[in-house]
Length: 257
Length: 225
Image (cartoon, rainbow over the protein chains, first blue to last red):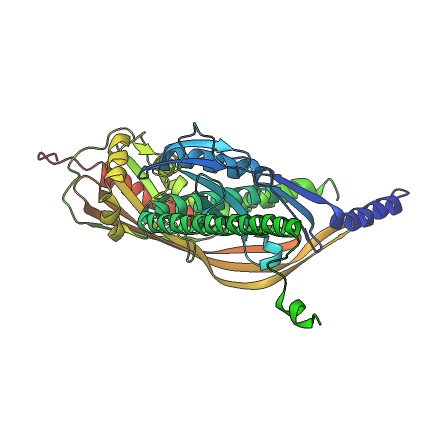
């Protein structure tokens, strides 16, 4: 009986502490390595930047503590499994930069996770854990500067609230389903948009040429102006040496008595 | 809790398990082809559940149950099939019914992968188990001195599934088997809740699996295709 107040105190403490816990979920997944998709005759370099490789969602849910979902490794694994089936050659890069001369890549592809959201049954009053992913795939020309296209990509996954499964397992499964969903969407839809991609590349190349031409013209004009100014300065120097300024301002002459 | 109560509690649970809730089940079969054109080989059958995000989806544990209940090793696990056919059987991309399968099989790469897997018969399971009625209430209390529940809860569940057997080679529907089971579960509680569960989904699963077993073991016709 003497332990009862202590037990009660422990119970109260555990209830209070319950809201301060952190649920950490590391999504670990393997994805099918031979997706049944049409391979495109296109060589790409994929940019997995630091933020993408180490993406972790941190969120606090009132009365359900903090949640940390580490998705970085799993999303890299998804693209590593899927892209070699879609493209004839794939190389990896850590950052967006111009491709080296000896690279055969025709396009640079940079996946970026723009948004990730999740919900637990407590929030939605349903039996499901749900995960939403919103990606944007950016396609650049070899120079790493000319943006050809932005390709939006979404993924959704859910798992039923299992009686014996932990919340971590349920969220991890929902995240894997969402990743698979995003991968499926990309693998099926991207090859169907090759005409639009080709048109976008032509447009991007035209814009790049126009920009280069405008830059060259501006540079030529600047050089010409500089040359004229230099010649004029030289003439002024010559005239000053002779003592008769040929290009003296008219006003100066008028103002002269 | 009084230790002398343990045998009583155990016996109550045992009684509840023995009684179970009452379940009534109905199995119906419609055969659209006289028999299978070719006897199922190992791994030549795959059982797939309806997978779709926006509406209901057939529970994966039900599909597993039917697969395991079918005796023999002819059934290729659903997960292995879905992985091998990725990305065509994900919730977003999976066909919603057998009517969509011819379009999918028109894709040469998909047809070739299915052929490589050696899958000849696809069993498409569509349906779900739902709670149709619920009544009663129960209150549970816990305190340092002990705890207990008081009340009475009852709920009715209905499991309704239809399996369509499809020949991937001839692209023909061979038949349909439907399995319906419904029952009411009870949970009275006097300190300890005693669940008397009507296992409607398990009943629907075993009924469907038994009928599928009969359907698939029908002798193959001589004009094997």
